[in-house]
Amino acid sequence: MELEKTIRMNILFSFYRELLTDKQIQYMADYYEEDYTLAEIAANHGVSRQAIYDSIKRTEESLKDYEVKLELVQEFEERKKVLEQIREYFDHHYPTDKELYKMLNKIIQDTKREEN
Image 1 (cartoon, rainbow, N blue to C red):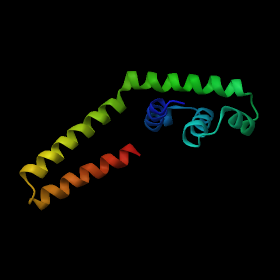
Image 2: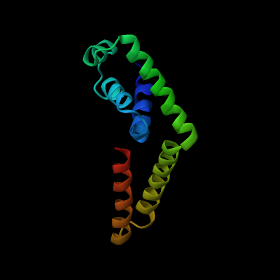
Image 3: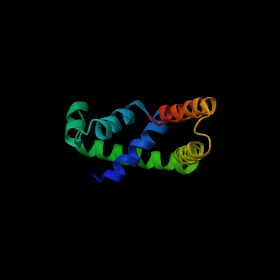
Image 4: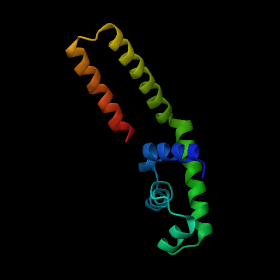
């Protein structure tokens, strides 16, 4: 599996997981989070390897479609970039402002929690 694709699927899965069926969630979690092979997943669920493959491919397409329509990941990534720019600006122009530092850190921590 390509690392880039795996990372992208994990991000999409994280954002849109609640829109999937229980079976889709289990197969995707086994494949992308647990790194099980298709054969292992099939054996664990008593179905064919082909059924797992087809389900994962359909689910991947669904996740991509959700992102095209909802753009939650894109918006999140844009907010992260802006926060990084704000942090750099703060560090350069307001290094001694403790109150502003607390507020900025709260926003950054909330964003990191969203990411997970």
